[in-house]
Length: 356
Image (tube, one colour):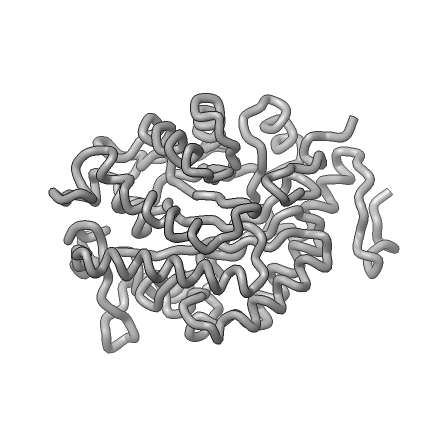
């Protein structure tokens, strides 16, 4: 019997050849949102390396939605051509191309990590940030502008237009980014959302924007293709968003036709306290899957084939997303197969190096 890690996963009309997915990881290497050859090689090598699903990094639906000036974007039609070329290569390697649509909210307008990851002012090429409430992420940040109704409507329109472009670019999996302290997550959490209108206060109000974004995306995304939502299952901070609310949200998203919850955690506040260890986020994925009935993806310090297989065998998740481990090893899909004794197809150009 084939290991579950190499058992195909059917989601709507799509079949992933295995349960290995490349998690969306920012490369901070774009200019004006445009993908380039770095992204082709980065994403393409993970496809030729045997992963079943390749999810493109957080891709901004508007210029102000970028984390940094070097973020990928999909806010104009000119972005489509290079993305389509990358996706054609991914598909040629029998892998599935996915995109994560994102808006960075109050964590936008920052420099890249190797330039200090600091807030940028206008003179440094920065821009005004937006949030549910005028609350800084950290004491050194500028004060974000609380979104008014017109601003919220623009966010929804931007996600909808970005979905149209994603379809034209040939993406086959859509993921909405509602994690890591970015705009949608900041609406979910009472630590960053102090609104008194229909977008703040109660659980139903705080999840409203996320649900409206799902509606906007679904209005343009093909109904037979998978739709994921990434969430932070816990803020790891007292009084914040927690796993119980994540389960409730996941139930609502399942009813709305979302196929899978990509379960991450944290990054809303700098004073979070995370007990980091191997697979520390897997229990969140397990609980959401068990209590809501929706498929889940597990991510976070999952570093080897045996660990990933055990998560699947134990029914804790349906898909394993690899981040940093895939940066260390672009050929996860090939090397893990060897470790688990599975025969998989290698790119013919690499067959002479195939592990016996």
